[in-house]
Structures are given as structure tokens and as C-alpha cells.
Amino acid sequence: MNRLILLVISFILTEFTSSAQSTETLLNKQKGRFYFAWGYNKDYFSKSDIHFSNSGSDNYDFTLEGVSAVDRPGYDQILESDLSIPQYVYRFGYYFNDKNDLGIEINFDHTKYVMVDNQVARLKGTIHDQYYDLDTLVTPDFVKFEHTNGANFLMINLLKKHKFFTSKNSLHVLNVVGKVGAGIVIPKTDVTLFGERLDNVYHVAGYVTGLESGLRYEFRKTLFTEVMAKGTFANYYNVLTVGTGKANHTFFTGEFIWTVGVQFPL
Image 1 (spheres, rainbow, N blue to C red):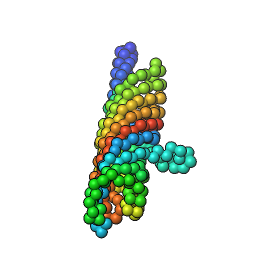
Image 2 (image 1 turned 120 degrees about the vertical axis):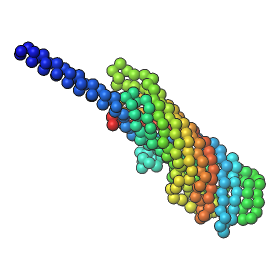
Image 3 (image 1 turned 30 degrees about the vertical axis):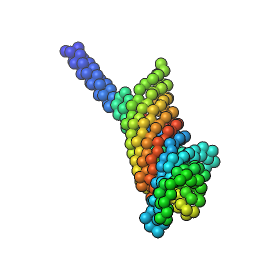
Image 4 (image 1 turned 180 degrees about the horizontal axis):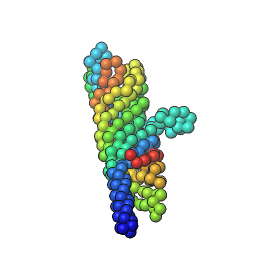
């Protein structure tokens, strides 16, 4: 009888342990991984046609065609002052399943768009009821146009990650990452028109879509760094300028991005 009781107890304990292990494995499989990353970017912009209009007392409606612009990285200020002065990025993301290969991400790029001063552009349209259609030297006293407190892309991305290399002890993992998404642009535009300057407020001015891909290195499944290339198309159809004036333009951006981050189960 004692042997029978011992056999029953042993069987129950074995089944309980097995069930507990199965439950733990299931829970672990259901856990995703949350992450946060911070980094910096370098940007290249396509030429764009910038349209300015104002139906008020400063009556004008003209376009500068084929305008060139550059970024303003500000990396020399990282150690000297605020970390958010240079062209920074941040990411909040979540990989869903046990393989951690699919996810979603909030993706913000603080990019700076600076129209090149003293360039020649085609001027078409009316200024104070006079029509123009000619090549014009665009001086800062005539037009100065910058999204320097940010062209600011705020996007939601879908993610796909593929393991490229894993060390024998799994301490080091190298992944190929792809992202696709869309969102809004929130610029703070500094504009000078006909000698009058205004550094505007942050506002939603349009939309952005983009693709991003690159490499992600993970250490101990906790720390990681990403080196990415990103291409975007942005449509700024409602930019605030001086007074009641508005501007609009579209352009493509090529970005190189480096981030460091931390991730953990959630």
C-alpha cells in the first residue's frame, strides 16, 4: 500500500511539474519585447518647388522652382550642450512573438531642412500684383526658409527582423531589419520674406511615408545598436510663414541613422 501511495504521489508530482513547465514555456513564448532607442541622423534632400502665398495686405502668390537644401547636423554640440540640439532620432517599439521577428514602432526623426542661401532659382508668379517668370538670385533678404527646429517626421512603422548571425553562446546576435511606415510632419519653420522674419510655432503641416533597412546588433538580448538607411517622401502642404502667409512643398529625403537602445520582455 505504501508503495502504491508513493507511486501515486510521484505520478502527481511529475504531472504537476510537467504542467508547470509547459505553462511557463507557453507564457515565455507569448512574451514580446519592448525597446527604446536614441541616436542621430545625417540627411540629404532632393530639390523642391516651394510655393508661397498670402492674400492679405502683402499680396503674393509665387513659386521658387528647383530649390536646393541641406541639413544642419550639429554633432559638435552633443558634448557641449543639449543632446537634443543636433539632428536626433528616437524609437519606441515592440516585437510581438517568441521569435521577435515582427513588430510595430513609433519612429521620430528630428531632421533639419535648410534652404541654401544665395542660390539661383526660377521665380514664377505674382508679387504685389506684378507677374514674374525669370531666374532669380534668392538672397536671405528676399526669401530665407528653414525647418531648423525640425522638419520632424513622426511615423508608425511595421517591422520585420531576420537573424543573420548568432554566436554559440547566444550573447551576440546580428539581425537584418526592415521597416515601412507613414505619419505626419510637425515642423517649426523659420522664414524671412521681403525682409520680415518669423520663427513659427510647431504645427502639423502634412504627411510623410518611408522605408528603412539596416543592421541591428544585440548583446545579451538586452542592449542593441542599429545602423540604418532610410528613404522618405514628405508633403508639407500647410507650412506657416510670415503673418497670414502659407507655403507648401514636397521633397524626398535620404537618411543615415545610428541608434543605441535597450530592450526587455513585456
